[in-house]
Length: 321
Image 1: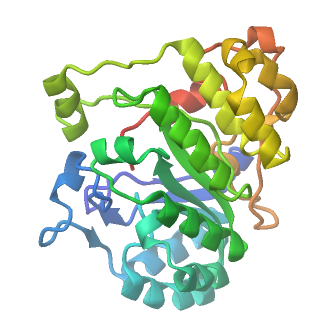
Image 2: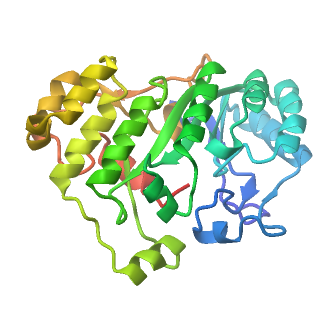
């Protein structure tokens, strides 16, 4: 733990390629209006703090000199919350650190001018938390982000030339067939350049606002595993190169709904898979890259969250960012 009570790791490149990056967290609390954990205090005085640019740059310069790092991963829940801070940070990072980096963003705080500024400083890749395409579900998460805002933010990332990913939470106690269909329709409108690393099941942590709401309302996950297999495959289909009208037709097919494996031939043979700790940036060239995982034969793919490995599922189970 650092002096701010934040967990942070510095890894030396001597052990493996995956150690050639520095993971850092420079802010405290959760800015999005999720009502979760410390985020329940967001918007109140002193609810969100960030270390000064001088300290951040000093630490990164030291890590670069001491450990030979070649990339930086900023694990603040949302990196783009302080425009003034970023304006001070970007030119100094470019001049004094000069390494490619990755960070999280959020639809409400994704501003095109800021992304371009960060890209000039070294931003190569960014992940945006979307969590659901259903207005109803987002309202239950206390995250009233209009789908149009998320789509615009995603398009801005694409237009800025940043390799962009989106997070999506699934298997929530507030989801149903209708809300999953809304998410499918939303993803049809989301720029196809937005990539996904898989879909993360909702997890209830003790004391969280989401957990209390589920317990108070005695909610349970309404859909079975076969239904989620179907919807997950539809979600992935929206990232394919198929014409939209064909994807929509597949989504309307009652036969496909009954036999989700009929979607498999239309999916990429290699599905998205990456560890942010290891491969979101090519530490040699500084380019954002995508590591793929070739799945086994369809019959061997488990029904539950079939488009990510168990390690990824365990690593990324969470409540809304």
